[in-house]
Image (tube, rainbow, N blue to C red; front, side, top):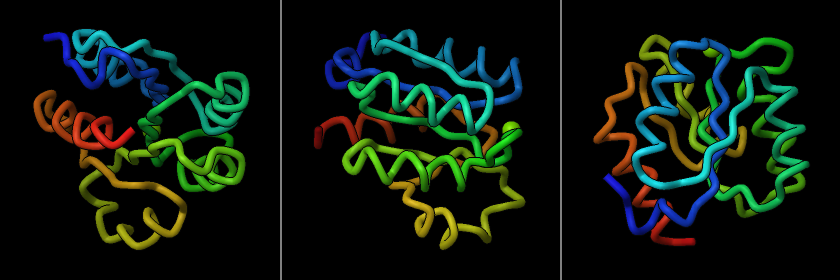
Length: 128
Ligand SMILES: [Mg+2]
């Protein structure tokens, strides 16, 4: 369903697992947001540099080349105001402090449920 807050936003999906990436794309394309994707932390940093109009980054933690923590830290240096949401496995939930310290605004726990994800992104979108 088109979402009045998300339909004007540009979202970068960072996920190395192809089926998860397609799943997230499928959920978010219904909101009307414009979507970009990256498969690893290095690509995420490059995409954030090349697209200064990205509003929200949905970042997997376990990624090849540069992990989600490292990528978030680098992106935060040149994009102070972008919303960065981590997607993390339940087993890594103890890393909440590390997630916040790395510059993430919030996190979602995998498996990701469509309604929860959209509600969380909408909450942040209302502020920007
Ligand atoms: Mg991963």
